[in-house]
Length: 171
Image 1 (cartoon, rainbow, N blue to C red):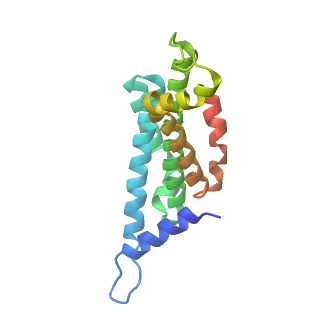
Image 2 (image 1 turned 180 degrees about the vertical axis):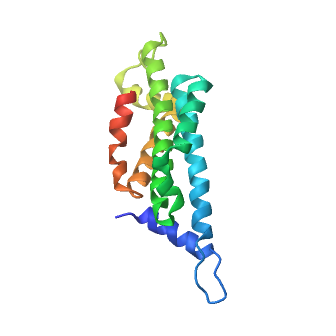
Image 3 (image 1 turned 90 degrees about the horizontal axis):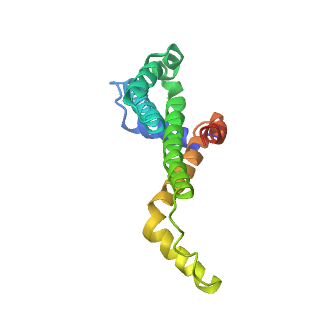
């Protein structure tokens, strides 16, 4: 079950050029695969930079990802585009999760007292809601973005099911 993959293939086929007989030309699929591979390589660079905070290792990791022979099949074959699409969605989900997790870790280790700690229980829920929307709403948005991208990656390729294990190993 890969509805995101099928919708992507359908959208590309709808805009792809056709020859004089109406036969679909594969150039649009190959261009999208190249674009997705470049995008995934950029996301690998940004993820490693986000984790290590140094551009040197991030560049080496992104270049290794970009030129590794394992990447040939998804880029060269139009039918392998779903691997690149799933990878892009998974990397985006991982980046959003790392942003959320680093913020949560920073909140736990800082000496900042939670704004609702001195409020009675009846008032706490409304104060917590206000605190979430004023201070941490954008960070919770990263968590929801990570979840949404993960679900889209699952609907692209079933192998994305292992992403939470990768996130747990980073966390």
